[in-house]
Length: 304
Image 1 (spheres, rainbow, N blue to C red):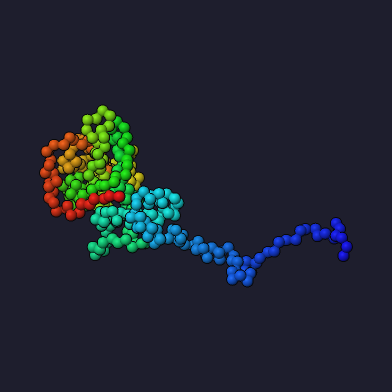
Image 2: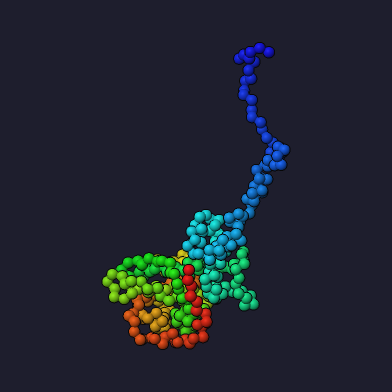
């Protein structure tokens, strides 16, 4: 054949072997086209692998639904956030405050909410907001009826007691039929220039959309606040002070003066407020029995 010359060399280099999308290489595997490969990896269903709801429920149940770990995981991606909002935050609330959860959801035939994955009922504002309300003190910002030298930052509350008995003290007589859980005030050190400690409390209505409180606020055309937002769900709020819906029993329950408190209720039924805590005395020592003890069975302590 002789030595290759410039004339008999191929004009283009030989192309590499091209494997057909359906070529069987004899190794027990078949190369798949892109659409078929997507089906193999189940891209059509987003809740697979680490995002599988049952897998995540088992993992966080093993961690005893640790709030900080769950919040950190929910921040990793939109998909994880969606699973947390739909399932995991509900499971967290159910593990920490089953009585409160029972008051928030309306189930047929008086049945109780269960922790079955994929079956969490919906609540206004979402379960993420409820979980934050149960475990997080929102702090305080100055408002029209409650002056404050500076903003008080929020923090995780290791232990909180939510009480229907206290909640009834925050309702005017015409709204006593409503179901409201309110926490004990979280005490903060006296801000500069103040002689009394700051108390911050929070709560949540059960069945707020059908409550007398909501009907009264809407019926009286009470205006929503412009600057204040719910620290738990971000919704707009009503000032109960501006609406004239702060009963005297609320100040007695908190241990404060009548003009030293304010609280707000958002359109989703979350309550938050603040007060100046009076120095300890024997006044109001019988306030716990003002409405009787029948509702104490519904009180609940929420802890990490």
